[in-house]
Length: 408
View 1: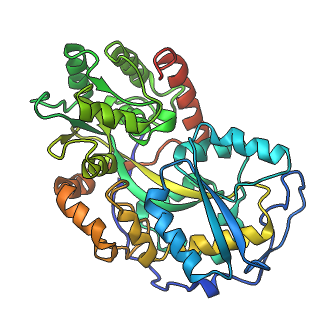
View 2: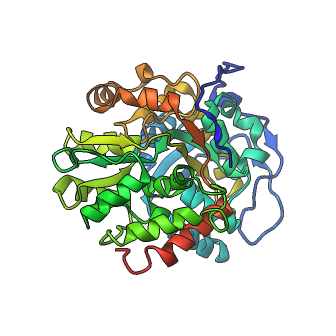
């Protein structure tokens, strides 16, 4: 299957940045229910009848990028949001937690920040409100998406909004003292892993950006018949992963342990992405001089974080969330997503340049960023991740056939 077009940044057709006070008509129709058991649509006001407390669940590590944006909104608009509570969790656990609240008609999570993993599982179970469809007039800053971010938005099926974006991977990160000739093809990686058993690793894909990018990038590298069909089109990928599995001791349940394993010498090479390369080195988890290798003629599998609203959130809280998202998609706020390189680059809208980011972000990128990323981004094709149903199927196959007895 043909990959998506090369990564390009389209000039914005419209450069208007609407203020929060202009985020839509006073009475947008529909948008959800006051409890998950009521099918009747409710009218979402332009602003809440009184300031609300928003309870936000992050299952993607997204708050590292966006918490300052959220706090800036609360500071600027105390009449809309009086307080925010933050909670973190894992993408695999999120659907069950939300579904339990919805079944009890006691939805306590007002906004979820998720990657494509949690998005896919939530979409497959019908957990989210179609905020992008029902309230397009209040989310006009979505018109300013970078081209690849706009492509990522199509995966949300109107039930979420892209708030951060990056080209992702797959990339390999390694200790240059242990790996003198890094692999440039899957066959070379397999040969290296066989010669160095237990020294290469990646995490469970359903809860790791680098791992799922590695998983979804392999069909393009291996020439599988349909990179978007893990059930019928990934014969070479599943065979490769089973062979690679023979040389992997275990699979962590998240990305952070893979970085720790690399940093402390347990492993010599791991799957990584642009952001997971830069940020752990900036934090000191991985030594600064560790290196990154790209596969020959690889395809970027792009990634994004989304804001989604569970069914059952009240109309007043929906009103506040819509204004918050619109605010987060202004260039001035979205530039904060450069952060310390965690989701490099990070911003998803036109005009959110590094020069607009906090000075700390600029300093980190200057010291820990890699000049070669600009050429890799410009010279390699990009492809969307799997659609929701296919992604869930891929995770299920991996859990059953690859990681069943080794996930820790």
